[in-house]
Amino acid sequence: MKQILLITDGCSNVGTSPVLAAAHALQDGIVVNVVGVLDYGTIGELGGLEIQEIAKAGGGIHRIVGTPQLAQTIQMMTRKTVVQTIQQAVNKEIQHILGDGSLEDLPPAKRSQVVEVVDELAETSPLQVALLIDASASMKPKLAAVEEAIRDLMLSLKARAGSSKLSVFHFPGKHSGEDAVMDVNWTSDLDGVRSMFGRLQMRGATPTGPALLKVIEFYRYGTLEGNQSWQGHSSQEEGMLGDYVV
Amino acid sequence: MTTSSSPAYPPGTVITGKWGRSRYIVERLLGKGANGKVYLVRPSGGRGRYALKVGYDALDLQSEINVLNALKEQMPDPYLVEADDHLEGSREVTFYVMRYIEGSPLHRFIRARGTEWLALIGLKLLEKLSVLHASGYAFGDLKPDNVMVSAYGRVELIDYGGVSRFGRSVKQFTEWYDRGYWNAGSRTGDGSYDLFSFAVMCIGLLDEKALREASCQLPQTRSVSDLQQLMRRNPVFKPYAAWLNKALAGDFADSREALNEWKRRIYEASERHVRQIPVRTPRWLKNAFGISAAVLACAIYLFLRS
Image (cartoon, each protein chain N blue to C red):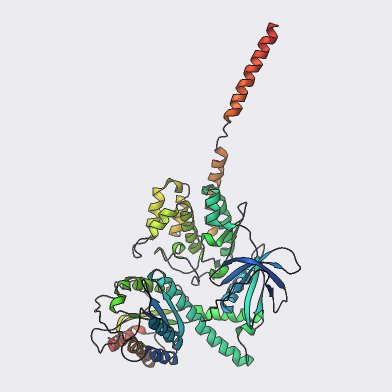
């Protein structure tokens, strides 16, 4: 299962539409969730709408929260999305067998069995979550909370029975050609990572769309080259991916 | 996402099971959990009262029902009564019916009745937990709101939405009571995860202010030693400290051992303490005794003189 979690606090203003980019992600089997982080004021009608639209196009969930709820929110969103992805796949199978029907139409005993399978798969299937962080100027005071939330997410992912990997990107990069910068490559342990967002240069532009496309590319390149082997011999591959993106 | 924000059912609403055909009449809303709303109901034409949970999401609630069904075989008095679907307008919602426990959440009970009840209630709660653990499940989201205490200290766990099998990730948790939040270990469900939550819960019940202060630290520096420190500062923790420290460190082999130690160190000690409280003779009784003795002395004196 593949997810992108976008954490932002406003509107994109450069490049490809992030809604289109999210639709591309979903086409590639990557679910896009969006969190709007907001401590004071409002996110604006436009920003709120965009957040909603990106999540809809990306087949995911969106939430707007303050920094105190951030950790719990992304933890919950990731879990929900995992279950949903499995459920969709299982529902497809059910429809395949029953013709027209979903989980709710099954009698309780059958449903109980199906849900047991869903729970089992949700817990054991390999999972990848790429976090894409809006590092524009207004996000700067929130980055400490974002980092904390990411570490907390890793802690929850580590508790899963299946393998879980996480990577972190921020945008925009140092110069205009750089849409997204990788901060942490695929890892299943953040203990060794001291500071995720070291020296950030704040720029005015918010290229959410192009940054999303970069992360999709990162995902795509990995699967093309590694042939689903990211969970196997990953060290070599990680180095390659790192070179490619940075 | 299919999180519906369906309005609460007004009193008098009839909930009819699609498969089992049983009917329940809503009396009032009891509360809201992470997975659904809980109502107080009475069966149509029957006696007694039950709690009925209507799920926001069929899958989440079914997952909870599965756990309850698995536990049904282990528990002496089953908690789950039945599970079914109800047609709400054009939509079907899943619900399940459980035993209704009249009482108040643990923190309110302790606030109203005093901390001397903690030894007894803790013992009963540990008994519940050890039954759950013996069947291979961790409760997960252990906090005062999820512990119901009825008038005479009977204890019941409510909201099984966070229950997970041992070795699986904990589905629901609350910051304060979470082992990961205190940088004290994983979020994998096991017996010691619940015992950790239990210990933090006791700390909060005995000195909530200190726990609040300890939790306000920077996330990186937050640790169990903060909890140990706050226990040293307040003498109220003295009888509990040894047990709580062991639970926080995850040093109990299992909850049965934790239960036995609680019984030995805390429960029996508190019982002795209760027995040792000297019964004081009220002053009016002493005075009345004095007066009657004086009257008796006078009477004897007068009797001998005559």
